[in-house]
Amino acid sequence: MPVFDYDPPERFVAGAVGQPGSRAFFLQARGQGRMTTVGLEKFQVAVLADRLDELLDEVLRRSGGTAPVPAMAPVELSDKAPLDLPIDEDFRVGTMALAWDPDTSQVVIEAKEVDDEEEEEETIDDDRPDSAVLRVHITAAEARAFTQRALEIVAAGRPPCPLCGQPLDADGHICVRLNGHRGDRT
Image 1 (cartoon, one colour):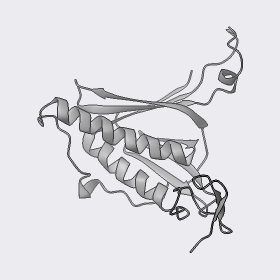
Image 2: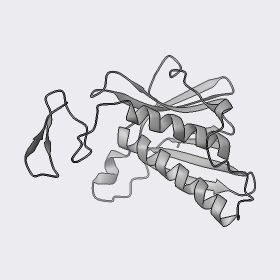
Image 3: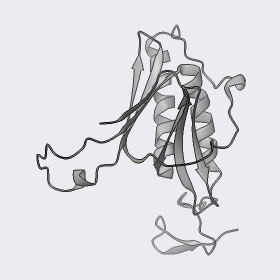
C-alpha cells in the first residue's frame, strides 16, 4: 500500500476547482520536494472540518485548557492561495480517520483511497493491491487554520435553500423538507 506521509507538510489545504454546482474538491499536501493531491466529495471536506474542530475542542476540554490548542485559527496561518499546480489526482478518498498524538501534540489525518471492492461481498484476495493512504501530521494551530479554509471552500458554493439547506440549482430544486416544494433561487 503506497503511503504518502507528510510529517510535517510545508502546506496542507482543502481546495475546489470549477464553478459552483460543478466543482471538484481536493486535499493537497506538499513537502520535501513532492506533492500529493487527492480528490474527495464536498460533504467529505465539510465533515473533515467539523470533526477536526470537535477533536481539538475535546483535546482542549480534557486537558483542562492546558493543551497547546488554540480556540481559533491563528491569523498568520491563514492560507488563501489557490491549490498548487498541476492538480493531478493521485487517488479518490473513500474513508478518513483523525487522531490526536499526545506525544507530539499533533493531529494525524489519514485519507484512504476508495476501494470499489469494499462495496461488494468480502472476499480474500491476496493478489489485490492495498489502497493508497495520505497521512498528514499537523499542529493544532495548523488544524484550526485548515478547518477555517475548508469551511470557507464549502460555503463558497451554491446558495442553500432556506427551507432544507440543500444547495439550490440555477432552476431551483425539489425541497425534501416540504415534500415536493419547489425551492426557487431568490
